[in-house]
Image 1 (tube, helix red, strand yellow):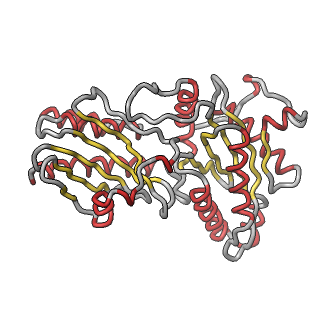
Image 2 (cartoon, rainbow, N blue to C red):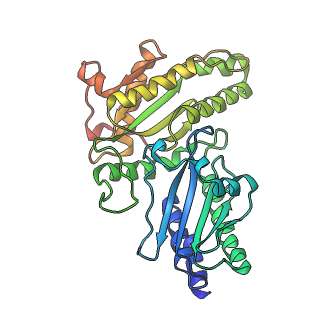
Image 3 (cartoon, rainbow, N blue to C red):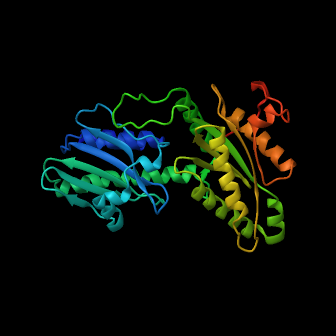
Length: 345
């Protein structure tokens, strides 16, 4: 019990979501209070009509540290939610599901008060005792509360997208991943495409001031909220979506190449152009994007994408501009590291 309390104390001090997930799995898998053959933390990802199970952490007796699926893995290659009826039952009933007569599977639903559903699935040679279920459920409540606190500090209050102050850390993690891909020799650790890289896009609503002036700030806020919902529907589950303030949004996404990144942004631009916003009607967006580079900085990448979106807005709006393409055509000049002075929190 003392070790469990120490582990819970350590867990509550973490602020990185991936580290929290892995620590939760390790804590449950290695506790001497029970004996599980394996522990798996799962999240349902993808559109509601085609959801799949992403493993946030997995550990068994043969592993010294938990493994996980990579967030950028093709969602359609993950196990389908509908193929696991017992997991789906735990989600629907919001109750613990017990399966089998040796080995035994016990599935705990996790309520993070979010739009995604998560589960903890444990396998054991003996049925999980009632007292153990209560204790694990209490550990999961701590996990839920920790996730809620992170959401409160990391998300924009209006749109519930990630806020600006979380961007630097996410950017640096993405840059590190891009330079050092995971070890492909590890089992159950799915790999991205070899040439995939990260791209940063800045999205700006065209003539948003007119919306506030003509319809008021309440309608303006509704436009921002609906645009955020369109972003969540258009981009993939692993793309990181931010509101930087006002009508400015940012996407940090992993794509195979420039054409792949441009296609995702074109799809979103057309989706917004064809969407009817209540009372306002049609609005458009201008988008600039740029790739992350070796030894890049958050301010450097943002500066390049911001220059591209400024070009888009000053040359007709409702379009997408690549910083790389604008430099190649001579429309923009390459910036040096010392010229980038965008401030981040």
